[in-house]
Image (cartoon, rainbow, N blue to C red):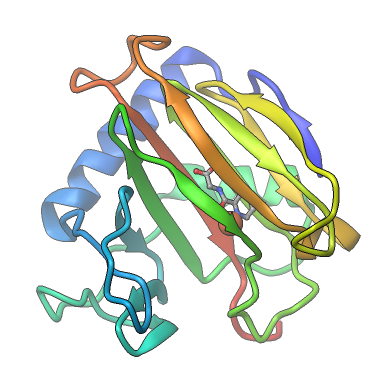
Length: 196
Ligand code: MD6
Ligand code: FE
């Protein structure tokens, strides 16, 4: 895992939040549920890009359309595509940008990103708003883990072995950022889905 702390200057963070607002007007945050149990996530989600990641009673999958509006996802903002190129050095663009929103008590359980046919493509994450306590593990669910603080403007690149490591968000630290008027945290996770 490569952490790029404070990579995004505050003006770029504000610019990105403004772009997110436009995206979320068209593709509203919704409450996803876990496969089988149907229990709701505490995180709300939306997507931009040609494909969006969905979790519903039937499982995890990528879809070209929003589950509630039925509309195609909005495009990934050019600034985000530039960040992908700069941070990953990949010769191909991402196809999916998952937008996670964490209120003060939201968390995300330990998981691996493994629904992509492009198994070896890097993943880029961009954090905006309140600081998160991110948990990074290893290749097995029982692998030792460590806690990493992700602050507004930080980027994380998972590539190589870490592309397949377990990770999650233990909690956010409310009130640690002034970026979002409503408080909380956005995380963008950019992925290649189909083999380039
Ligand atoms: C989050 N991030 O930071 C959740 N996945 O809110 C992820 O699940 C994640 O940060 C793959 C690669 C990087 C990540
Ligand atoms: Fe993940």
